[in-house]
Image 1 (cartoon, helix red, strand yellow):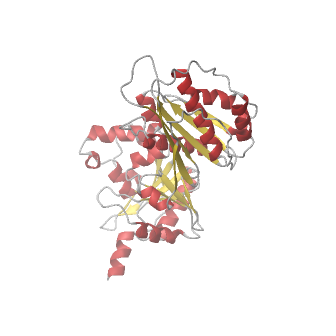
Image 2 (cartoon, rainbow, N blue to C red; image 1 turned 60 degrees about the vertical axis):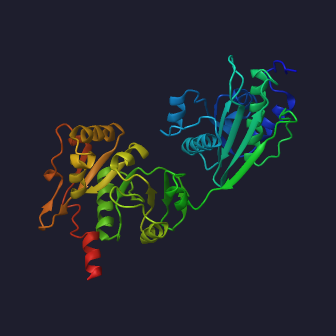
Length: 391
């Protein structure tokens, strides 16, 4: 027997749970694809929604989903992995949008339900919630033919409301309207160590405060001094001070845990290098081994670099020996609002070079800012320090 059309208006039990959600301190970004649309209306239809809902997203098309996931193209749109990635992207968006220190919950729902054509596969739903401590995933396979589309949409939306309520610390007394043969499977896992999450690709960056405290994807830096810091030396600190004046923003040191020509750094080595900055300044850890990736990760960011790095930045051999690829990369970084403050360096013959010695391609000079020799000169390098240490 088929269950007929379900009214999209929420009943008293749904309204009661939504009211309780709005009474918690959590704020959320909710993203749904394929089903769960009633839940958005229910959340926004109860007074107090502005305290809870920062944004709703419906990445229905494949390209929309890929864009929402930060360029990741899922092999299977309706899966637990995609739901978790959606929840993580929603959480990241929430961290960016919040105006206070309110706890953020990102919710992702991806489902395939009854439509205007017969589907060969199962009707399934995956819902994930992501917060500072972990991720929880709900999965249900719906009995095909038991309900019309509106009935399946109602079930999925109730699952969304229940999942969000649990993520807000509530125990929702809500009828999910599941049939006896339908089971809700729930899996919860804690987030790992921040460095491990970065290495595993679960985090885009990790911020390390001068006291050593680590935060996954905290406040985006406005200006970076990238380096391997093996070891960190006074030249880095002096360049940071000079670049702060040139860029007009406080400098955060940046260590990429991956390198173009070398294997990724081991966790132990990352922690060892980070310890050098205790009491000196904040460090952001990334997997962005090129400046183009850094610019995409932190649009509008300024970069403090040395003359030798500026030379490499405009060399086609670092772009697959393609000058057009190099020019395109520079244009992309410029369009993202990034700028490069360049400090002078001495070469192997002890000749001091500045931005004026860099063969900047025609039309790209506004991308670069000169740090004068009077503001910065430190004839020291990590390579030389390592050589002296070895001797």
